[in-house]
Amino acid sequence: MNKNLIVLLGPTGVGKTAVSIDLATHYRCDVISADSRQIFRELSIGTAVPDDSQMNIVRHHFIKSISVTDYYSSSIFEREVLSLLEKLFKDGHTAIMAGGSGMYIDAVCNGIDDIPDVDPSIREKYSKLYLEQGINGLRIALKMLDPVHYTQVDLRNYKRIIRALEICETTGKPYSAFLTGKKLKRDFRIIKIGLQRDREELYRRINDRVDDMIAGGLEDEVRQMSEFRHLNALNSVGYREFFDCFDGKIPRDKAIELIKRNSRRYAKRQMTWWARDNSIRWFHPENISEIFMYIDKTISAG
RNA sequence: GGUGCCAUAGCUCAGAUGGUAGAGCAAUGGACUGAAAAUCCAUGUGUCCCCGGUUCGAUUCCUGGUGGCACCA
Image (cartoon, rainbow, N blue to C red; front, side):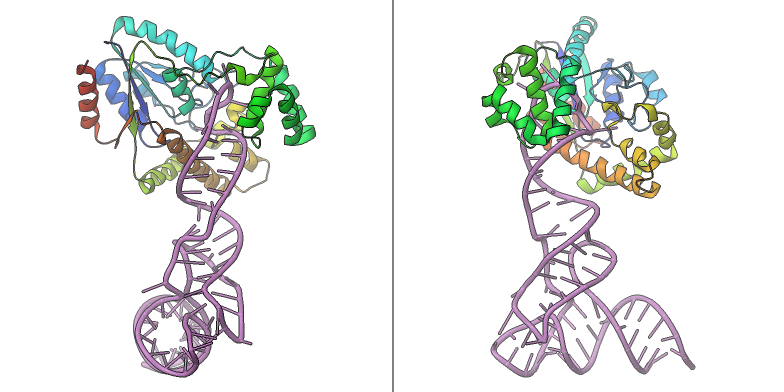
């Protein structure tokens, strides 16, 4: 197999961007970003997108490519990346995908089940049901429309239940009928490189990076997004906390502390996500030569 | 140098007439199929500063240390 997708993943702040530039430069290829927030063109300071010089050295995809007002999903990402990869593999045999959104990465690597699109009004309908009747209203509806999924889903997680309900209503079939649990085989080799640091070191970097973002004008960036604050894109670490600050709910110092804490917790959740994936080979970001050796060895192994 | 106060979880602190302890924050573990930086679940992690004494039993009371703070010299 001479088509290789190098997947570079790791928690926020671990140092993925620098490594991705090194890899892309070395293998002379593009970088596909797998980051659910860097994809929005209105956001850059709070999402820590690659800087101009990095963007100039290497061609990036899915960075600042859509608007916060656009609908997007891991499924769209899967489709668009696969289509892009087809083109990229015509010119070369290697591509790099780098990012921290575990679900986006899994969508590309394993595929997700084919489920019809839903009309946004249906999601709104069930969101309203949740507001009016709480989680119990959702449970009752789910028990009726999909008793199988009712026994499997986390009944305390309203987003999961709404997702199932909107599919049931759209398709007239139970949501659980669409779930195969099968992993798709891709026609390219996937090499997963995980970047890792000691917890203490990672948290220090995260805290420092938040300070840098503040110094770099994050507050203004958030303020300019005020009219979009209700959108999912702005329900992000670094943005929601400042909105609370603007509302007078919390002082500025507190907002900054919370951004740091929530970033740390996010990093923790990312690591939990990847902990079960034993196809990932883990490296310290500074051990770049080991990463090259591992990739070259894996590719030449055929 | 003298006097007084303090020493308990990662931090700030509470506490028991003596029966090995608990709040807030921080933290830790987990789940995850088109919102995923989202959403959801679970968890107290401890030589109660040290050596002795009293006591059936001391983190608690007492002597002496050590460290910190304040005031007086």
